[in-house]
Image (cartoon, rainbow, N blue to C red; front, side):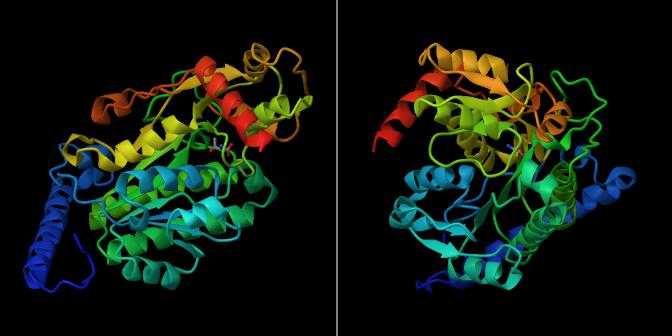
Length: 373
Ligand code: AKB
């Protein structure tokens, strides 16, 4: 499906008629329902039995933050599925690797520049955005102003572009950082009090609400996963509280000791990258008529920093780790230990594949190959 014109003129008018018609229908249906449920237009029930319905075509994809930890691997997975030329990778400050550049189109793009973003969407005939550009929690606490600007400004621009250009779908990454202290930390439900204490967490809560508003008000079909700490071997995470988990593997494979910046007994929810990619892509393609909400907890595994070191030692027995908590300890202590992700399991069949043992085996194998090069 060509979205913004394209070379073939045949059927163009018919296409636009049909497209406009279905768009108006979507908006009217949503508006009617909101009027009907005027007392609580933004509540989740507003999206229940979502007759906005069937998944459209996700054919031309833009990934923001494509040079980041998740973006790098997401782009490759999307290219494998939808074709190299159909996935435009966009990064801002970090140089893309040769592999990323050679695997398909790449563009330098600042998500804070809405015109540039809109142009990329129109020129690339984009129908779907995976918005991964974000400042993470630890850097966010060092520079809260930058965190606010990038996370709120970037998301607002993406939502506006999605609205104006009537995109088929928008996928965004939220975080366990939306939760704050004062709630039970185990098996935290999808819907609960969200009172984070970090700027990063606040931008993610506000972002979730903004996304919900754009869905209810304008019919922008956006879907969000609350990701835990992500562990991966390809690209280092940049400035998160959960980064110690990745750093620990690198140190162990390089034969170094590691000083962990959270206490040994700190337990956080984590996920291996292949499961995170699966979550994002599965939610993008999920049947809209089954979704009762826009934002989903996804849970995979939880372990303490000490248990992670222990699992590494089963393969690299000489690995040593000591613990010197810094300002990131308070952030970690404000987050859940595990999440209730039953909504994701019921509404789009979410099911992770990796546990700590299988992740450690795979990580060490991959890092050994990578670092030997
Ligand atoms: C971070 O540590 O900031 C991220 C996150 C959990 O969102 N990895």
